[in-house]
Length: 260
Ligand SMILES: C[S@@+](CC[C@H](N)C(=O)[O-])C[C@H]1O[C@@H](n2cnc3c(N)ncnc32)[C@H](O)[C@@H]1O
Image (cartoon, rainbow, N blue to C red):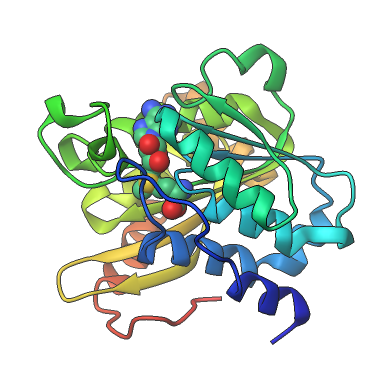
């Protein structure tokens, strides 16, 4: 285990609030995905890293620590719609000696002009649990998990926003469940010119959780342009390959392993 990884393992829960999501398996999976990709992240030399829905601050603090002094000058921004998350995240960051600008807003509302095309790394552990639509966006802790139909309500808002905010070399890491139809999410992003890879997958008896990384890819962009120009749909082989990735993962049973 490297020094940086050891630092991450020591992240302390210094602050909490009954209405703020405490780091859980999904938060750990997202941080594990970032750690698994840490060397790539360092080579990527991000200038601006952003977390949408920071909750306790566990993920943004971990990211700032793992990039640390090897990636000097990185600016960190984190948003959350829950005002209590601002204090908890601020205290978590401070206790670990790192800094991020915190903004209490809906996804990135009010920041689009300032951040368009500038975010090099975006990380999101969204509310993804399938619930009745009217539970989405309620005040308090329910907004941490309530995802509406197929758990996709907030995810589907985030994807086009991410496309707008990400820089040309920007990467998006997002947590999804099988119930969110991740192959459909990959297809939507493919139509915008993004390639995708599962960085981490975890399963329980009932569900599989994936951390998917998206990046703009020249070949995928060319395919996407051709599809628009010729009014064609995604080739069957692409669809089959997307579905099979997530289909296979639902048979994957041993919690705690990485796919990469
Ligand atoms: C599953 S929790 C993840 C928290 C933290 N990132 C983690 O991994 O432990 C989802 C977070 O997204 C926030 N959230 C929900 N809807 C949001 C929205 N529309 N805009 C910004 N944040 C939102 C919730 O308040 C919550 O903190």
